[in-house]
Length: 97
Image 1 (spheres, rainbow, N blue to C red):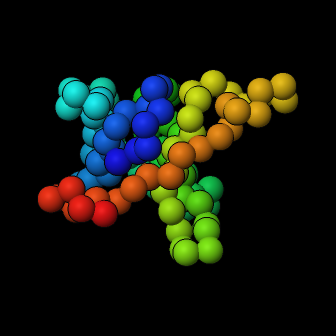
Image 2 (tube, rainbow, N blue to C red; image 1 turned 90 degrees about the vertical axis):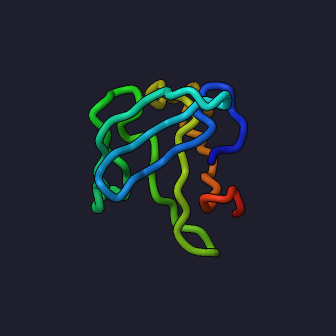
């Protein structure tokens, strides 16, 4: 699940069978497609340019974390916020962290 950011889906599923599903806060489907991990860059690759390269693994003091780029616009020198990211919260099937 994501922290609340308007342009982002509320829930992301990276399934073991290679499917990625993104849901809006009302539960509606925003995107469904295939994904793969680019291990060299530690970035999730998707077959849709809007979501491709927006999810990555970031190293933190507490271990690896998944995060998503807030803006789908490319990084520009004058717009540093385009590269800001939000952490993903891992929850189980019952909704617990």
